[in-house]
Image 1 (spheres, chains in turn blue, orange):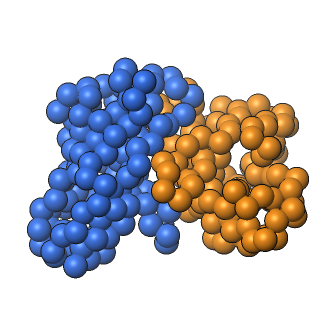
Image 2 (spheres, one colour; image 1 turned 135 degrees about the vertical axis):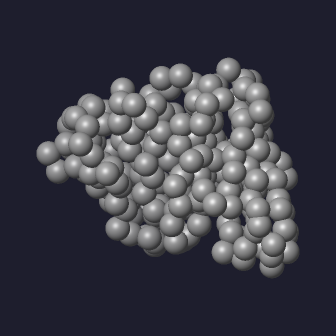
Image 3 (cartoon, chains in turn blue, green; image 1 turned 90 degrees about the horizontal axis):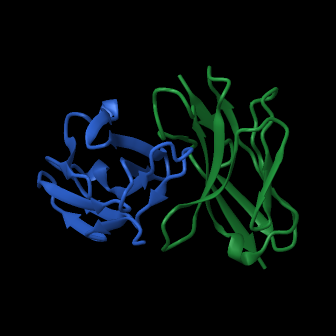
Length: 114
Length: 116
């Protein structure tokens, strides 16, 4: 089975731009997670979907971050407008129903905002 | 709320020495699952090992950890560090069976650097 795929792998944006990151979960997985990875904060949850329904939207990230799950096999994370502090690696992960917490991660998108 | 603490941000070791990465947690749930995920450079993070059984040692790929609910700890250990163990290690907590499904609470991560 194919793993989690994420595109693009690298993104450079100017401050104020809108960027869209994409994720395809493992086929058959019903849970999908978006994380931001930084050295200071570690892995921060941005959004959590179960069977396409938004379960959690990561509180502090609500205002400029919006994740959507258009169908069971595709999700997007929009950052609008971008700020330099958004520079980080964005990871997508998926999990089966009652997967016991085992999440399968994609390779991530490295975002640099100038 | 639930939380995971990894006190060491960076651990630097000489090859061959034992590894111990600390992890403690806080949760109101008695049925907590604890995890260690490893993130090697240029790879995706992946599960290293997990446990929900009190005082039972769990092993995988030379690493081991024992969940101690009395002290809320799940330290990661290895008897002899290898250069290839250099990576970022995350401890994580799930209240499996609770309302949050497969959601994990991650610690800040510990970067393990093994030197020759």
